[in-house]
Length: 484
Image (cartoon, rainbow, N blue to C red):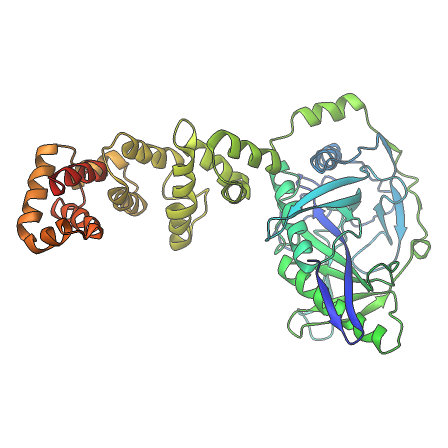
């Protein structure tokens, strides 16, 4: 069932395309040697090029180009061996040059695709139109003085990849899934850290509405949305606004808008510019970018395993379900942790412990997988103790909690607490005898046909052995004794 919004005149379909600005992971800016480290004091990471001093010429950052190619390859996109930088002319206080160096007609990366997964299990292909490199602008600060605006040029010149989707998205959920998948791919590739709070990934959201089967209607662009949740909210709010205009006989104006999450509304920022408004022309200070196919092939060969193939491999190699595999590959650090635990062991059991007890412990202790109080090696050793029947599953939970609190090895905890599983059949038989002696009435009921009482006896025997008895041996011995 497709997503529609019901208006007074019937159902409306949403049409969405996303322009994602992803900050390139690099030590220096796109055309200068200034640092890109986040959080520095204002205007301490500004070169003469960034400040647009006369006569200062841009020099392309080789690593930023490589990062763009890696991203294009990760998006299964066409890599253009010939591309060009253009000047996008506009004046603003946070752009000292008076123009932005970007790519327009000849981007470094062409068409590609992203496969998204929806909550109902469906998958969809979202087209990528292009990826181009451009420099970021600075940042205006309006809250430092009652009458003045300040400018911080630390971001000016930082390399951005603008990743433009086709207008293939038809629901807020699809937009959220697209952004999560794109962020996941970028983080796996190491080309963008995806930190939306720090502004290293933000989205411009193009929204229009139409009746089913109609051509596209006028779109509006919602600028600089910095969280996935806000993107999803903005789409619904803006689509509802446009439907109301169309149904009241009005016309939607093509414009750039801002989303106010506090008020749950979008508002006009400026009329939407077209390409001719920016007077694009080839940057005379930069030669066309010409790539060698051999270098592109070299970068392709060095790419890490990406989320989709890793998910399929986890399913195949470790026998875990599609959903569990998706949870485990969501972050590369989690996938690496899981694989270290699962290698050579029961993959399903490892997945259960990582997504269950471990995730709960991380949440409880406010730690991440990188700072986990229990290492992958330690968790693996604990699973080995379950496998060789040194401890059972119930005792393992006690051991794990101790590992979280103390950092001790599972072997040391088992010895310190005397938790070694009882596999001595003589001890188990004695415990069974003691339980049957305490509960003659239950024994009589069981033998008169109340088979459900078997679980009661198992629980009592485990209690008698303080949870240390091997459950399989208890079940086997009890069955023999009760049916005798």
